Image (cartoon, one colour):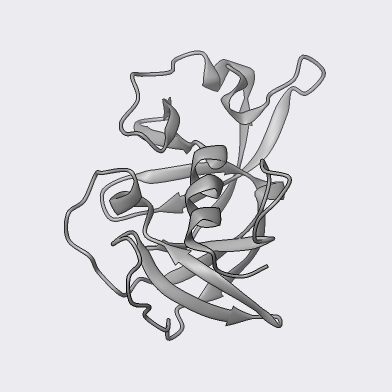
Length: 158
């Protein structure tokens, strides 16, 4: 149940639901720095296929991650989306302060409570912490520590 760090004192957690190609990510609201309309991403040479390239944002150079590819859930590398979700580094004490996810639709805010977390399903891929059913749809809770380690290994940013 701790995948979203729902504490005993917290009855609800504000979250952001991010639409991907064939699934949705659920993240605590405080992990999201900003949601941007799609912008040109500068491709890089010699990076894993899950890294679409880099984006200049508020004086920072941040890598843009295609979560579906990192999570071994999609083979095709698509270089476009509907928006970009800039993430705050949340788990590692070192590495770039920000990175971004490519999203296929507009993210939306939602409240998640402890009861929602009880029905976790088997993991979908290596970059997941859990999969849960919210209403009628399954959503993935990403393993932010694993993702941040992969972003750190790229050597991009500070």
